[in-house]
Every structure is written in structure tokens, then in C-alpha cells.
Length: 319
Length: 319
Image (cartoon, rainbow over all chains, first blue to last red):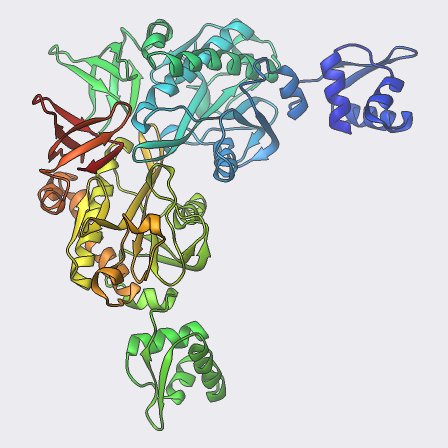
């Protein structure tokens, strides 16, 4: 009932009388009033005016299923929303969900991750009420080895979302870190389950530092948040909504047209790694200049002697 | 206690006195006697001779953890054995186990699969007490796109195991079906979980028709069993043991040397598809002659006009 009252107030975004709420949900005025109080206890600022009713004034960046549902613009793409106050990692949680029922367009969002993971087995610090931790399921009709460029598509979508909502100069460090002023604000962990020649599903896991006010000394050298860069607090649901909207736009292109090639030019324009001197860390590390990105999403690095190498994995740092 | 008595009797493979069993397990003679009766109830033929003790004469092809454990030759490779009377599919069960703890050398064996799966979403009929349904976990240090040839390694291991234990003319239909006299006796479903540039794990799922006495009319056209081909009943644990032994032999080569290339020649010698006219079913089907296998495990098919195509997925039927 609590959730339904919240959904109605969020959807109307205006005063709704206790009588109307009671009628819509077939409950008493006193039950309405109890749930309004519960919303207030949970952090919502709710104005109540005689003869007009109740209106949510401020949600203090609360995340829950109703908030996310009301914020999402492309509701036909996002079929199911799972919200948790805390999970080990949103990717792991989504894997469990998909093991029962593999479906595209499921999202898992959590306020906290106790074991947030990044690429190459690293941890992703995921404290409460400051970040976006979201995982999205996809079942494109592609071969397992074609998945790698989808993680670049996700990076482009996050970069656009941060520019559109927060007006920050976001850029992409190949393959899929989002930087603001050379510090990392977002990481993406893409995982897949597949047979040898058939994809079961892909999970795009995204962590964005939104309202973080400080990092520990070590992280502070390389990490930032939207708040630290803008001195403003943004609602996480608005960033989530824009990310999913931007992602679907590129994803439809990816599925319907020539895979990544249609999106490549835009990716390159947003990729800060290009035309920079880089150090590639892999089995044997080497230095060079990043000169391009292939249609498969690999980085092309030109060595001092003119030789060009194609890098598909590993860590690339900008010098 | 039941399991421990079974393990001791299987290991000794000779008469063990009730007194000795009692001492080893710190239980009474009457408790030993009760458990011996329980073993008999479960299908074991146990001889009991005054002053000599108990000996298992015949296990009637019973499968359980103790039987599998005692049969396995390469015990350092197979670290954990999970046996079930019934699961939906051994691959699914192993996925659940690995989601808690990713480890190499775990096997899941079941007497029945209620939703046995084959390649390309097909079902694998898995009735009780007639087949081997086994899944094995691997965590090789390779990239996700390098996994495909491992399924060919598994096919070679099954083919050798069936030849060694059952003396049948087993051969491989590319990529990983095992045929006897042109009918399918074994299918392999290889699945993986991976990040874009890091493998989490591979599961090799194998289904072998061992003692099946008849198939329905439709399946009978294409399927066979060891029993139907030899008129003999073989113990499933002996085939499991030989398969795992053969698999590790090739797997060590695969990991330590040049991946699949060292094993390729032996695979080709056992691959019945080669030098046959074939029909390749994929997005656009075509006819040709299978002329080779690449070092990645792909099939090379020569068309009428001399063009050679490399096939990495889809269905290839022999004409």
C-alpha cells in the first residue's frame, strides 16, 4: 500500500487528496494518513494542504523501486526493476535472477554494495546513498566474441548521461572508464554467460560516484564524484534514467545495424585515450601512442618504430 | 557412517571383518551390520563369510559419491564430487555451485536429469540408471574467445574413454558429438562465464548413453547407446573415470603448451566429418567438403567452386 501511494504521488507530481488516495486504493483515510507518515519517516518531505491534499516536495535522493520506475523514460525497454538497500554486488544479484529466467531489460539497483567489483578482479567502493550501482541484462542475437564492443557502447551512454544531466566534461578512457578532469567517476563491468557459439546473456554493471564528498587518501588520487566536480548534488534516479535512455538508443543501433561500426565515430570523439601517449600493461608491457579504435572495439597503439598493435584487453594508462 | 563403510569396502576390494569396520569407525558390530543391510537394500550384493567379514561382490552399476570417488584415477585433478539422484541439469547445478565458489576440478554427476540440455537449446533425454550425466568445472588462464577448442578436447577424451573401456569404434562428428556406426552416443555442452577479457569459468557438460535398451521411434534414427552397439552392460563409473583421466591428459597439454595445436592432429584422426561431403546449416546454408580443422578448432569446408570457408558455429551434417 505504501508503495502504491508513493507511486501515485510520484506519477501525479501534484496535490492528491486523502479522499482520492483512499478511493483509488480502497483504503480508509486513516490508512492513507499512516502511510503518508511512513513516507515522511523514510525521508520524504510531503506538503499537506487542507482541501488540496498531499504532495511530495523533496525526496532527498531516496532510491526505491517506485522512484526508479517513475523516473525511467523508456519503460518498454526496462521490463523489470529490482531495488535493494544492500546486495553483495548488483552483477551477482542479477546473475541469480537470470539463472531462473533469462530476460532482457531487467535492472538491479542497490543503495549499497558490500562486495562491489570492478574489472580485473578489483573492488569498487560502494557506500550508501552516494553512488549508483546498477546492472542491466541483455540478450542480443550475437556471438559471444562480439560482446566486447557492447561495453564501449555502455561507456558512451554513461558519458552522455553525465553530460546531459550534470553538465560535466565527462570523457571515456578506453575501454570503459568515465573520467572527469582525469579522475575516474564511473567504471563498468561487463559479464556474460554463453555456450561456445550461443550467448545466454550479457550483464552491464555500472558504478557511478554521484554524491561522494570525500575519498580516502589513496583513492583520492584517481577517483572523483559528480559532487566533487560540480559542488552540486544530483538525484541518482535522474542519472539512472538518462543512462538507460541513452543506452537503449545506441543498443538499438548496435542490434539493428552494423554492430559497433555505426557508433564507433561517436565513441572516438569522446575517447580521451586517443592521440595520447599510453602504457599498455599486459603479458609484455609496452609504450606507444593510441591512434585508433577498431570496429570490434579494440585499441590501436602505434609503437615508436611505427609498428601498430591491436589491444583487446589489459590495462592502458595515459602518460 | 553408511558412506564411510561403503568407501572402506570399495577401497579394500576384499573381505573386511565387522570387527575391523567397527574399530575403524568407532561403532558397534550391530551398527556395522545395520549399515551392511542398508547397502544390500540399495542394490549392493555383499558376501558375508564367518571370520573373514564382508565383501562387495557386485554393485549393479550403482552410482554415488563413494563409487565415483573410488573409481577416479586422477584424484588430485578432481577436487570435489557432487552426486545427485536427480537434478534439472548437471550444468545448471554446477553453475549454482560455482556462483558461491569458483574452483577447477569440481564434478557434478546425476543419475537423472529432468531438463538435460544439448547444444543450440535442444533437450537431452536423461532417464535413470542408463546414462552418464556429468559436468566438470575448469578455470584455465585463457581469454574467453579461446574457449571454443576446449570442447573439442572434451570430445577427444570421451572418444578415447569409450574405445578404452568399451572397445567400441567411437568417432567424433565436428565439433563434439561422439558417434558409433553413425549414430550419436554422446553430446557435449560447453558453457562459460566471463568478463569481456577475463574468463570466470568453463563448464564441460557431457551426456553419454550407456545402458539404454531402446529409444523412441524418432530418436532411434539418430541415437544409440553402448549397450545397443555391444550388447554388453558397462559400469558407468569406469567410463566416468576413464573420461576424466583422458581429459586431464589433454587439458594439461592444452594449458601448458600451445593450446589446441598440439592436440589437433589426434583430433583430426578421430574426426569422422573430415573428407566427407557436408551440409552447413547457419544463416545461409551451404554444401561442401570438410577438408580440415584450424588451430582454433574451426571446421574448414571447401565449396564446389574451390572457395574455402571457416565454420565456427552452427550445425554440420554429413551427407
